[in-house]
Amino acid sequence: MKIDVHAHLFSSAYIDCLQRVFGNDSTPTGQDAQRLIRWMRADPRMIDVEGRLEEMNKWNIDMQVLSVPFHGALVQDKAAAVELTQLANDLVIQTAHKYPQRFRALLAIPLQFPDVAVQELDRIADRSEVVGVILAGSAGGRTDTSRRRLERPIDRVRPRRRPVQSRTGSECDCDAADEDRSVAR
Image 1 (spheres, rainbow, N blue to C red):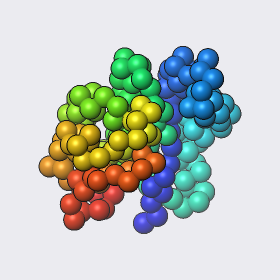
Image 2 (image 1 turned 135 degrees about the horizontal axis):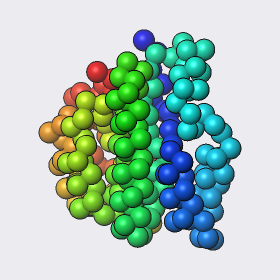
Image 3 (image 1 turned 45 degrees about the vertical axis):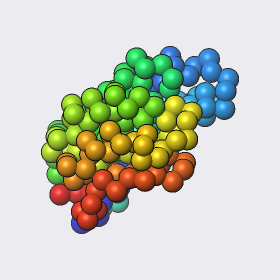
Image 4 (image 1 turned 90 degrees about the horizontal axis):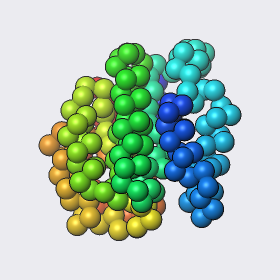
């Protein structure tokens, strides 16, 4: 079985929310987000599930693990972080639910708001479509991804036996997956 574990999918609503949050942001983070927004809008494969399935068939890819390059981890506004988190996760879960033989989902959580991260994990981490969690970004501009900072979200992941992918830009002390490192079930 061929599994693509680095596959991104976006919704128009997610892209629009990113535009609202970062559209006038001239900081390096805002400029990076604006480049990402242009790319998302220019490449129809990023929002077209049927086209994605055709491409997967063309290249004999059996399954993709879907995720979102999660700029919600960089947002300082809590309401915007919640909106981006839910838009990102709901799309990848809905797609994996609709096509259970073809897709699984990696969750995005806003580490800069540990309480929101915990709520999001409690809301959807037990869904059968979910195979792991991404710790993404620099946690709202902070690079503190120590055990102390991540303790509550990681404690919610551990009993669910979900792998954790760290993309924080710093070393992450997160052994939540225990011995089980498999992604697809």
